[in-house]
Length: 171
Image (cartoon, rainbow, N blue to C red; front, side):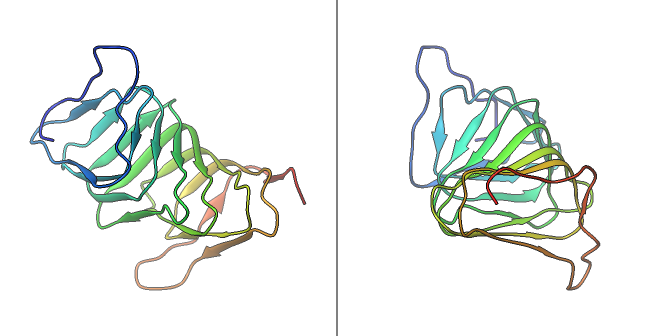
């Protein structure tokens, strides 16, 4: 998709497989209200802005540019939905939720900033954060037997920080 994406009728877009490629030459405006996507790849140096919450059943690939979620939520709900990056970033003042039942990863750069991250999986799984990033609030909800790791090793990886006290609501 090289332009904007917006809904003009009630309901949302639903596609559970495949990848939505955001590869425009200018900044892209995406309105995913009520939508569920398979995977999303951002390959736009000028970035993209989401004007509503989005749900991914697959992966978010931040190849290039910044995906600005603003105050909108992003849910990675596939069993092993993960965030990967080459040179892209994620910015969100909303909540980024990891609800998959398997192993999930979040590879984000030091330029990525999340106001809130939540694990709320219904089954045991794991979530690993790679690279240096900032998370304002971190909550572990209904997950049981969930493994959480912060990996600060490897080439170019910096310390991962949580700027506020983590909340563990189901210990």
